[in-house]
Length: 138
Image 1 (tube, helix red, strand yellow):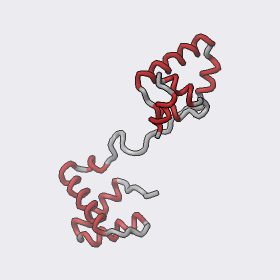
Image 2 (cartoon, rainbow, N blue to C red):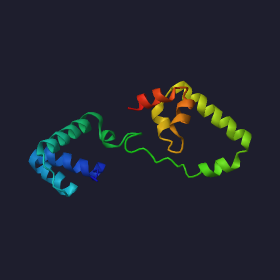
Image 3 (cartoon, rainbow, N blue to C red):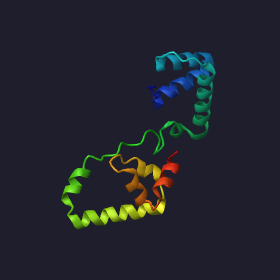
C-alpha cells in the first residue's frame, strides 16, 4: 500500500522544486516515498500540479477533502440481535416490505446474493417465471 505524503512533506518538495529544480524535487519525493517508482514523468507532473495548486489556492489545496479516501466498513454484527428483539408480526411486516421493494426494483443480482433461497422462490419473489429467471441470469 502506498504512503500518502503529509502537507509538510509536500511543502518541502514544492520548496525544493521552486529553489533547486524538478530533478532534485523528484529525488526528494523518491526518498520520502521510500520505494522504487518507475515513471519519473508522473512524479514530475504530480509535483508541478501540487506546486500550481499551492500558488493558486494556498496550503488548503493540500489537505484532504471530506469524502476522499476509503468508505467506512459497514457494521452489520448487530443484525442478529435486532432480529431476536422482533416479534413474529414485525418480522413478517419487514419481510413483506422487502419483497415489495424487490418486486419494484426487479433486481436479480441482489436476490442472487442470498444463497439459502432456491431459484424457484427467488423467481416468485420478483414475480418472474422460473425459466425466465434462469435465462436472465446468463
